[in-house]
Image (cartoon, rainbow, N blue to C red; front, side, top):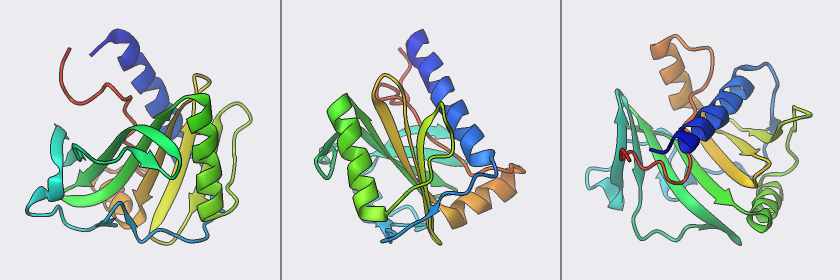
Length: 182
């Protein structure tokens, strides 16, 4: 993996980890999603992998993509959509976009679907929604790279308890981080 990519991954992950660990509460979500692209929150990893391709394993955490999947959320074109599992339970879906138009479209789509968000930080472009089953955190960089994470509350709490962490897990990785070494 390229040094610049690793630096950007570290910066993005640190930003989201800090945000999730804070006491800032997200806005109550309207139209809370019951699944992420067909996978129910905390559901077991499908036996047939449902077209999922394993791209990375980190202990009890695995990351998958769906080759051939339409990489879009509404009118926003995604550069990557990933599925995160903890102990073979679906824990988060991640949508990554790049570009000013996609950034604007993704922000508008999430607000249109889930209502008003909390924007807890002055200098970090981040939007948060909280639901009973899922929390959504959308973080955008000045480069117009955005990552929307849909995090299962139940699986996130289980992982936090297992690992002794005070925060829900995150999985933001840049578009060219597919688990392969460069």
